[in-house]
Amino acid sequence: MEFKNQSVLITGGNRGIGLATARLFAQAGARVAIVGRDADAGSAALRTLRDALFIQADVTRAADCQRAVDETARAFGALHILFNNAGIILRNRNVETTTEAEWDATLDTNVKSVFLMSRAALPHLRAAGGGAIINTASYVGLVGFPGLAAYAASKGAVVNLTRAMALDHAPENIRVNCICPGSVETDMIHHAWELYGDVTQAARVWADKHPLKRIASPEEIARVVLFLASDAASFITGAALPVDGGITAG
Ligand code: NDP
Picture 1 (cartoon, helix red, strand yellow):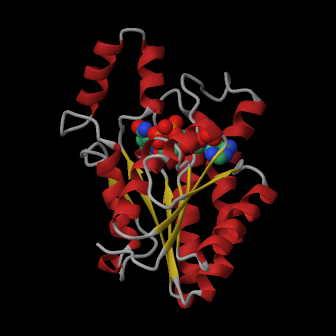
Picture 2 (tube, rainbow, N blue to C red):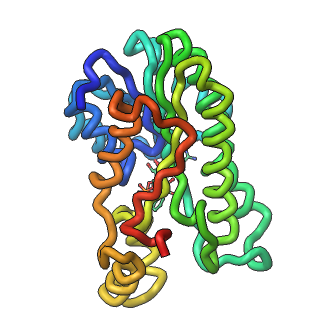
Picture 3 (cartoon, rainbow, N blue to C red):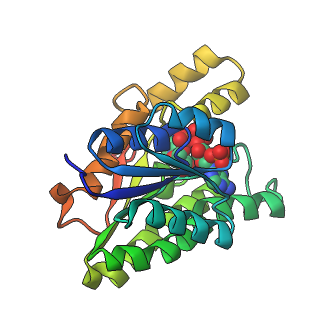
């Protein structure tokens, strides 16, 4: 897949799935801007990417999202692809044990950010004659999961926001899809294993939840993002694609 002369903006691009995706896009010739709050992680990420841009921004804030999009478009001359990937998770919380602040933080980071970033980016995608938006949902956006009330609500919302945006912007040649990953080996999963207690045992338990009996590497998720952004997916819009080792097949 080639992305020469394409520019890509990736939220949560300084770590994990976002950084793996930034690397693949850069290797495929794209100009890449990554967004996150942690400037140290941003600098470290930039050292592994050629000609990329790090923009320190909080995706829960409208002004930050507008600035991130504007800086990217100014630096690269256009914006073609938006990967809304930043996210947080609160574990071991049902609706009774989730505070209002935790609920708001989860929904703001995982859903409102998709609205704010997409709203800022759409005029640029339209000006480029079309483009692609890919959102990171989760398999927990397709099925329920105990102890993840706010997270499951947020990822379910990302799935249906994806569909609504796909319908709204199809006439403008802007495709909107989301990925629904199973467990992926990033800091997010390592924190879950630490919460579990015995990290080695937790790794086995997490792997066993997936019919393929393992979790994914960030690169396995990144490859699907590039596919959805590419012309190979030119007739795909409004899809919520499980990338979950079969976990939602049962
Ligand atoms: P990480 O915890 O490794 O990375 C999360 C990223 O989101 C970081 O780059 C972080 O940057 C960024 N982020 C969080 N909050 C904000 C904010 N307010 N403003 C800007 N950036 C923010 O997680 P993953 O790479 O694993 O997760 C990426 C996405 O994939 C998330 O949406 C997650 O829900 C989803 N996902 C992950 C799975 C997994 O098993 N790992 C499974 C299914 C879905 P910073 O801290 O610098 O702000």
